[in-house]
Length: 340
Image 1 (cartoon, rainbow, N blue to C red):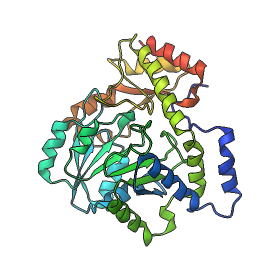
Image 2 (tube, rainbow, N blue to C red):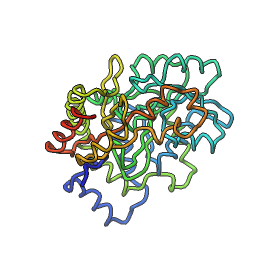
Image 3 (tube, one colour):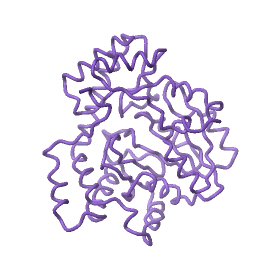
């Protein structure tokens, strides 16, 4: 069987908490969901957070925290997940979609500056493929900043000081760095924003919150989170060195940042079909990196965001996760160095 592109970093011995929850009287939203949000709040240095039933609800809550309403404009990357487009359409929010730097996958600052003249209510920064802009870029915006860290953590080696932006949100889907088999998380940096965030759910049904069953699955991974992240970086550096022997390359990091390696992206000079077939013949799954992005869904962006269009057609992902094992790391490394 081929090495899967994604695999949750969960071991059998980590499942005790999940099994305990399964035989308890409460599987719905409860203390474990609150513990999950509290852990991340402490870990990243937030005032507080809320665990949500799904990723879409997390996006809704982040926007509602700042009072974003129908007709408002929000700056967002052309490589952001299509979930944002679905939320924007439901709410009548107008996306101001910025093209990206072809090397880092981060929004072009010239594009962002041009949109500032259109009175946006907020800006959303996605840590695409584990990359994130330099800290001074985020701190320099004069409007509320929502950072989506579903694909990467910044400054994970300094717990309590890694909060970026005013709101951070996380998808807990099966293919993200931390998974709860679905769900979402919203964190507020400041006390005022946390109060606004909390008030959104006070009069709402518990159905909008993460179930304890899912939270237990997420909590099982959190005790090893620093090890998970450091292992991803170690494997990523091995793959990066191997890829240098080929004619292809990977994405770059910002000036004072490191890639946290959600997966291992390869930017192909040509021959995407040939490369994918070669990898599969060696027993390795790959995936197009941006088929679920805004630029893949919106025809007009294919003209206004040429860099994103290029990445859509040229960037594929290779497996990279802590449970790969030495043999698979060596195999993938060898394949990366000999890509056609």
